[in-house]
Amino acid sequence: MKVGKLIVGLVSGAVAGAAAGLLFAPKKGSETRKEIVDSTNDYVSGAKNKVDSVKNSLEHKLESLKAKKNAATANNKVEEAAYNTKADLHKAVS
Image 1: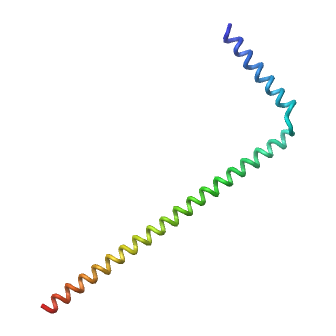
Image 2: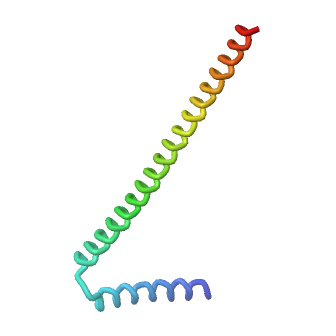
Image 3: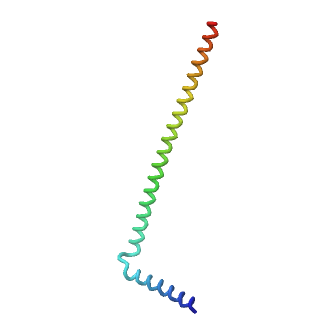
């Protein structure tokens, strides 16, 4: 019997809350829905901007890493060419 009373109480409370919400709502439902949609669009727009910002930052860092790698590769090739040149000169002199 206690479960039945609990369910009746919960349903009664929900009905009373819904009725109070309808009676004391400060705005029409269409206005409230429009505000909800507008605020949701603002949040989505803000989230997109943040995602784009992070994406651009990561792309910039990736390009920087690629440039450093290319510079290191070029430096290694220059050092290798210098070493080979020295070795060739040493052979020619000997």
